[in-house]
Image 1 (cartoon, rainbow, N blue to C red):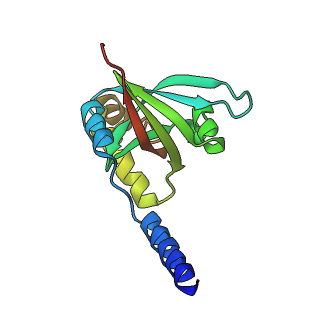
Image 2 (cartoon, rainbow, N blue to C red):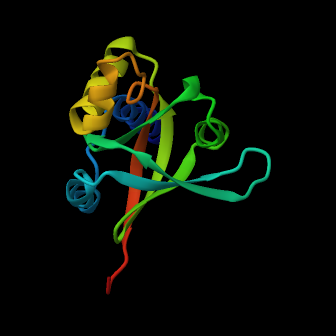
Image 3 (tube, helix red, strand yellow):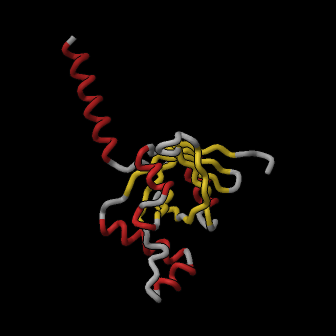
Length: 155
């Protein structure tokens, strides 16, 4: 009996340590992310924090390190951002791909600056407007971790 308990504890400790390291996306998710990364927008579907209804809107994005990164203007006071704060599950669609995602706000200042740079590098409009003081492309970032991808065939 003691041996079995010891094995369970070791397994649990191993799982906890594994959770701390970033996990590489599944190969099919990574391949789909590579195919959509140059697109201009994604459709993000969230669940309304009060209504419980689905809401979909197009937004800018970048792909980095197996994650979909998005930014909310208005210091995060957009409906979709607030919806993801309350319920961090959502769906991202781009072309024939639909990703189930898990949202996590980014708090680290250095990482936020790197994400802003990625947006300014990808979106010329944001880069040009930043020269005249616009905050476009420098919103409050969220990391969307794809947990699965579905591919709609016949498109």
